[in-house]
Length: 227
Length: 254
Image 1 (cartoon, rainbow over the protein chains, first blue to last red):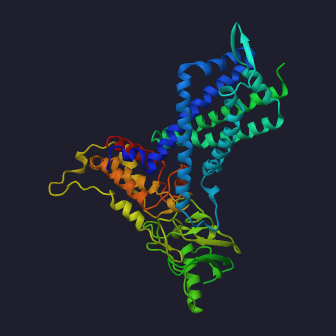
Image 2: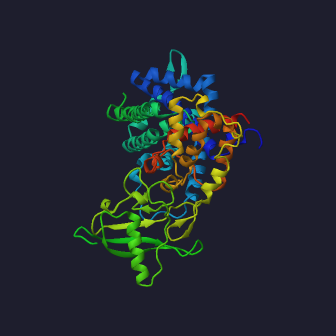
Image 3: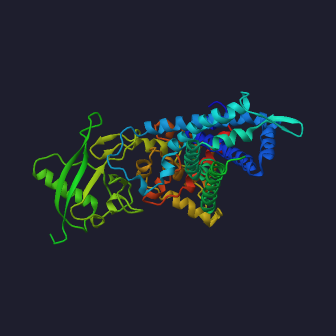
């Protein structure tokens, strides 16, 4: 066998890379939420935070690592799902899946798919403008000229249907994470009965923090438009 | 012997003449079923009724009928081995159902376990996984030493024994939405990986068994945990985590 083949190309390996990229994306979510929370500190602070994210050299490199993480996670997810469907072409006439597993665990491809749809919308609305166009107003903070990202974000959070899409996407992400977080540790082999309960609790808490945290910011700025 | 408690049931049973022919669910009414009879005995009664009428009896797997051999299969009302935890189909009794119930009886479904006839599936793929490494090949005969001369922690011995209780019935595969054989395979890996005699061949064992599992067309584990719930022997998901650990470190060393 060629070196490391099994580490990249086998059912167990694919789940390992799914887990590793998933946990990496989890850390990204925490950083993203932290930056978003700066909105509560006002326009100056938020624009300074996004300016840092847009100019810091380490963050610029990590952007590409992050993109690779998303691509591997999505590609593996689709590949695993197709293989799994092929493993049972004839369905049962009578299904009672709820007797033995949770809805979230069985529908990761759908919760993940919804998050992906949102990601495309999100990239178009924010990332595209922040990174590639000059459609974002400028902001002068103590002589440093930067994007007025605060204006861009609060503008979108003022549109009711955008906030609805945003909150729905984070409910999907919360469900995805509630299974995915603890599942990653199982796939990577970093779990046993002693840790199982704690990991599930941590996963549920983390999912709630992410889903509620992001949604709350959007809802707050919808009801309290920035002046 | 009949009593007032006897049940009448509508059975929807998968009939399929052979692997090549398309199958379908066929309705059967059975009458006079004792609540104390086992599910397989109920099928025996149905088959006697069918034979009396000159019809083809329903073919299903069974052997010991005491929950040890792993031969009986059946997907009953959406669950492997039917309702009830930690039991095989032969240990399922008709008191778990009510008079007048409709019961769906289907074969275990997986690409890797094709139907042979009616409710009987070919589980050779599981045998192939086992043959790829589910044994110890080091020579232990001739100068056998006292088993107690090898100190083994109690917890490891217990975990290895628990893994070894897997009867290879295939319920985990049947119930998994991905038709994954990971719980089965992980039990077979763990029973050796935890003990000194098995550890020496551990890396090759896990790599070979996973390779054959993939070749046979089983799905990938997505950690839904359904296998553990439906396993008649209560094989723990811990075994899958252990197997992942064993496999990943063995592949990394290649």
